[in-house]
Length: 579
Ligand code: PEP
Ligand code: MG
Image 1 (cartoon, helix red, strand yellow):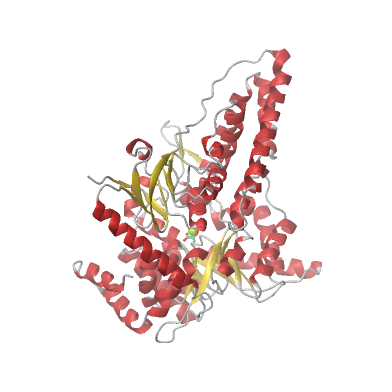
Image 2 (cartoon, rainbow, N blue to C red):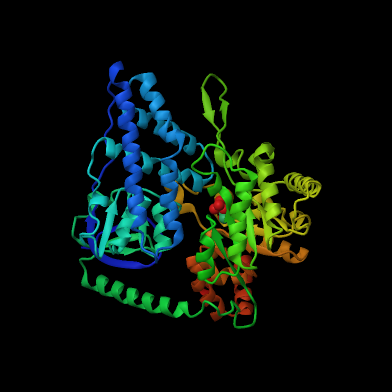
């Protein structure tokens, strides 16, 4: 009988291979007292462990093959930087001295503090970056405890060739090492679409399914499984028919990829002549190269949060400008849309009636533009850096999470103030740099006609728009099943935003995950979307769909979907629009 395990497919494609169970658990840490005369020695033991962890990571980094995308090395660089950060190198030594406790316990205590800070962040991307802290701390702990690192010890012996790795979670270093070993797919118990494993797997084009809670207890070492990264399912390959079916799909996929490569320089134009812009979403400056390689004609979303990560001070204006300079330079005349900081914040309110403090819902709290307008010392250097970058090439500034006209006006006023300050100081900038807003909150979509009169462009952030419209936390695995881009309410909001932009004559883009999902490309074309921004690896597939489509026909179908009042007719119409 075939066993099916369901998780979240985070990297497309299928793989068939034998399971390699990575059984490594979390290092066990207990507290014990260090007598005062030995405290200095314990501090030294800790410092030596940090140095050893650094040496290990440097060795991993040196082994990254040249053909691996640059951002993979940068994940490891991030971990190396963290191993230099005082929050992980100095704070534990202070704890060892003050509490006279062992190095492992001090490190664990500090880890817990840092994780609490990350957990309180609202931004799902940053919240998942708590994994970085976890991974780096685990590496130091393993050195302190002299624990065996199976992932590291399997290098070079060829044991992983063609294997499906099944693990609780993987670090970027594990991922790189194992990819180098020729592994064929990943399955993890933890993580979501925004976890490192997911991002790396997508970039490396390795099929991956994450979030299968019981993967390691349900699968046996060496048994053959099929990993379906599209459906998010892992099947035990006991039925020959199922195996044959997947082998066929795998072959077809390979052929398709080869054909897609030929479309890199082909225009994204529908059969009836509608031109579509295909842009890339990036998180790091060096991803621009991958974007250009993938056939992008610009960056539709540069998530600048990464600049603020893994550190405890905000980046200065000059540091930011340097990053933006790199991106603008690499894009060679194509436009980059720099999104201002989309960070969340923790905030506690006192509950009434003596029930104690109640945590506010951070998704509805002081996040993104709300936080920036609240903390101008944080926001101003970024505004200045983005505007100064506009002197170097085509730049657009994009504001996340707008919900009211008042915020739009506040931002525009700040932009004008910044322009004046830059002029006074003799800094160059493009006075016509477009300032646009993300449509991520239903209120913004409903008010898009008002917003679009003040803004230079709109970009629909479906990841959040769906979360807020359907009232589901996008990273809560328990309500994942309700996350539905095709919900009629979501489609109405998307369409009314596109129409508002058209009426006002400003561009409307979409930069949420929906834009890069081939299942929705025809529907979005039918809704008259002409600017898509997505992960670079998705661009060619979407381009192919666009080139095969007739926009006029899809428009008629999409109208029927929007006007459909018969619940039985809806799925049928959707199937006509499906890819
Ligand atoms: C979105 O919400 O769709 C979006 C693109 O922004 P992020 O995923 O960074 O919140
Ligand atoms: Mg968003």
